[in-house]
Image (tube, rainbow over all chains, first blue to last red; front, side):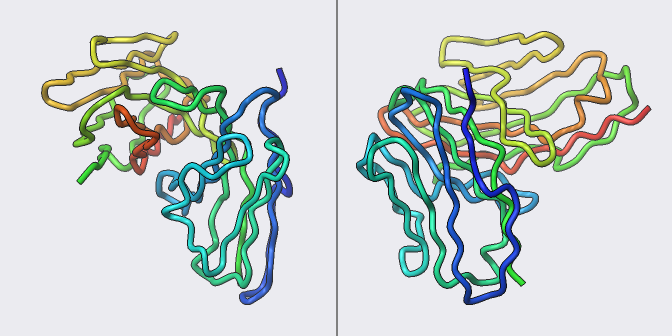
Length: 115
Length: 112
């Protein structure tokens, strides 16, 4: 079974520029998550999709971050404009079920550096 | 406030030695607790999952324990190997909700 795919793996941009990340979840997984992981910290949930609908985006900085999952499969996360504090690893995860016992499978992440 | 705290923040041990990582949580109501291993530059990978009724769960040289009364969990690694060097993250799921609460992780370094 193929895992969660993410691209790019690394990205360096200057502040105020825009950037987009792509995620392809495991086939058949209806739930998709985007996390931000700052160095030395645990992942922080940014947004959660169930199919193509948003379940939770309470911690997404909506003034600069946006995400979509138009066809309920792939997803993109965009930052516009980027700030220095956005430097982090952006992890995408997917799960088959929505609920407490769901197993989340994580992708390798995209490491973003904002200079 | 729902929180997950892990200790120590970092740990260095000699290859072949055992170690124990701690996780304390205040998440309520509790659904389950997972330990993840995150290698540098990789996404987290699940090691164990325990529900309220489970006290211990093993996965090879990894053994997790759960005391739901005191809201504490530990991850014991036996006969450590160099490949165990990673961050170990404790994640607690809230019952009846979609919320997961992540600890900040323990960075383990195993040296020869």
